[in-house]
Length: 261
Image (tube, rainbow, N blue to C red; front, side):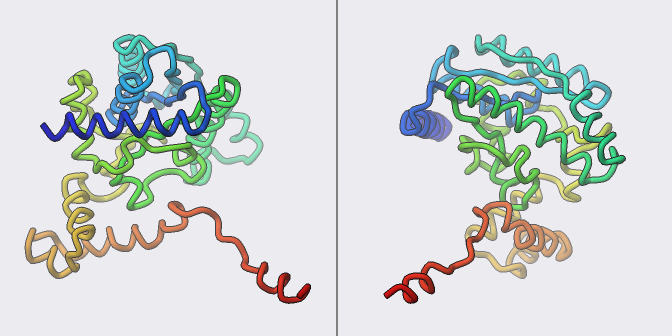
């Protein structure tokens, strides 16, 4: 079965990545959503429960109680230790300092707070931070730079969102998590598809087609997808390239070496 082979490959990848880094395990931010659940399941299978630490970092009033319960349930199923830290008071400090709590710049502080917490434990315990981003989000830049994008490696980063859902079913992730409407929980009532402006099903169809070399016209004709949706996805890919690359470095080494010849 294809999912068995995919799981084996990802588990090998996790073990190799951790071993090569000389790390003692991993830290996984567990939100109660399907991406983090699948990542935690894979890390536990690859490394064992004692080498996986979960972090549950809700914002009370924004994070639904159901998400908190589901995140704890994942940790209980896997037998992994977890740290529960509410981020409200930390976010409020930033909000007061900047006089802003509602703009996109302000709400992006939330995933950056969570990144700091993950790296605190990773640094303290000699572990790596396992990212929970999927290929759909990575390709269109639907993540916060140096927030949920601030990780050491990405176990499910080559799986589109619709594929992650199928893998979740194969791994035995609780059905309530699998069927949950995806949301980054940046504000109350927010959903991923609402913010992106397109369903994951359609997004993945476009992304897979582009990956296979189809042109915009091919995709419109083959799948009957509106031109504006295809153009929107292509634009998101282009505008978010900086999120997927290391910071560019000004190339002056050649000048220095030629000067001192």
